[in-house]
Image (cartoon, one colour):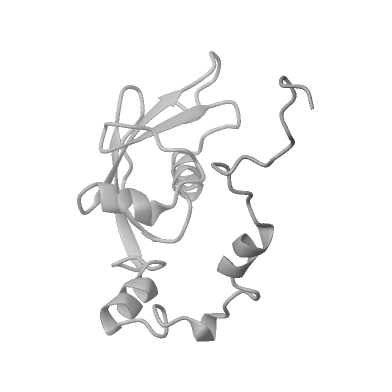
Length: 150
């Protein structure tokens, strides 16, 4: 044998990884919900909280309209709307009361701070502000005959 040749021996400091040992640590089947002891049932407080998530404290919301700029005041500045309705219906109601044309633009601001999107739920807007929900409205018209008849 040549003094330079080294016999092929496995290195004793490196242990081979056994794939079988890794498989023994993982469960064979996934656990079912009935086998879980953590979420067997919810406490009364948690059940009540989950039940109240979808609802609003009040079924109806009072909206107070305030004219801004060239918008005329309404004869009746308060109206009630179901809390689950969209803000789009508030804008539609105001357009109908002001007898606006399709070319007129109506801008509504909640509490004179922000203009919500038309698909925002009125009950969510009410939770942000105070009772009643203050909707400040401005009107922009294209030049031409007035929609209010001078």
